[in-house]
Length: 408
Image: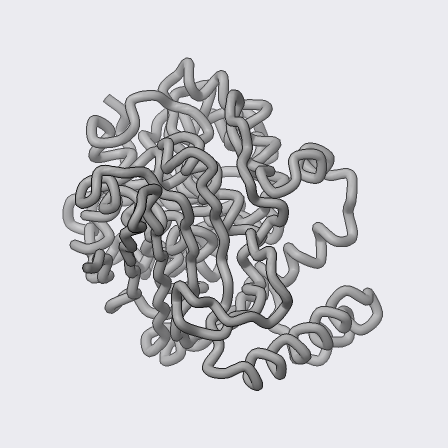
């Protein structure tokens, strides 16, 4: 039996500290977890956050040192990795060690090339050892992945059919912009020969599909085949492109391939807008902002002047506590007349999606693997939250204070 249920890498970063706070407040009296840092001084900064956790320990760990990393990984049931910005140049050695030792792994990255490289390099080893390896366990991309999972599952249970189409929509939200996400995007744009990049480009819309999957009808990463601004009859709203759809939708397609959502199921995600005019204005603003971000000189200026938040920073406590998000997925049944099911994920008391709720979603994913392994997918591998954790994860998120429902 391993002495540590969870080990947190990157615990001194902004979201890592929120994860330590969450574990201390919700599970502190019973959970044996380890927080790590590369220096003793940084570990001392974490100790006040662990005041209610008598079984928690602080340990030095340098993920660039294989011996140091191995000593942490082999003594843990699950490793939760918050050491990113970006993850692609740090996380693969951690994944390799976890796959080799049969240790489960969760992180919060939305880096599609990393996910692709992780699967191609270590899926076989993880399957052999039984390790569940999960990327994208935060706001990118749990809300989209889990609402799609809930909607298609309810479709089978209530109507006895697969799904012809799944559409995800980010609803109302409030919170801070992630400096880490922006910095990671800038890094990926500036470095074109990173692990997994060529494979993602070659695979197109089905960039994350597992071996043996046959793709499907979608032609674009976000699945939208219409104009930039269009009226969505299914949701009854005007829509525009959602900036995180190219991250979320490939993951949902991978879940669909692993779980069999339906033959030739179309999958997309779009941003709802209040009117056609507001959609046009938002697309224009997104275009201007995107252009300024893509050009290196203006991007540097945006970060330098504080217009964009820097990596490692985040919103103040009030913004985190008062923040919220809502994601919903609509499934259309593969029979006539076509039934419809809508699944919702609301943040409840989890706070803003990009930070506080991300820490909670990642911790609960890790705890699902560590404490409820028999309720998870039997096979290990580089999987998805929906395919690996399923209903056990939905139940944990609901019990944590988030709100996951299906209608009608």
